[in-house]
Amino acid sequence: VQLVESGGGLVQPGGSLTLSCAASGFAFSSYPLSWYRQAPGKERELVARVRTSGRGQNYADSVAGRFTMSRDNAKRAVYLQMNNLTPADTAEYYCFVKVGWTDYWGKGTLVTVSS
Image 1 (cartoon, rainbow, N blue to C red):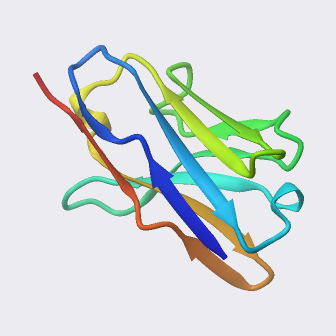
Image 2 (tube, rainbow, N blue to C red):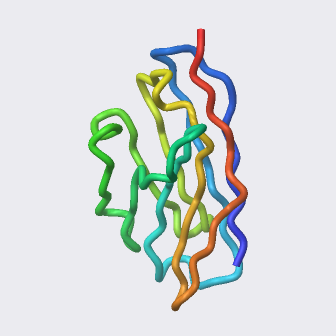
């Protein structure tokens, strides 16, 4: 199983960014996937989760209404559209999938929100 995130970078407050996660090594369309983030000095937290069909998502209260998670099963990819970003969104963002009894994480992509 391999998860590769991309799309992070430096963005000004109020700006937008879209993260991508390319997946391989498992039956992609059969598993829910999630985005987590970890800010400096803080624990890793769940940001969003999408069901296998892509028609159901769950969001952390802190990002609901600003972030949208989607998936493209044909491309084996998930995305995180992030709007109205604030400095509190600064973190390393990770793609996650649980296959069987094993948790798999990508290496992360850094998002920095600063003026």
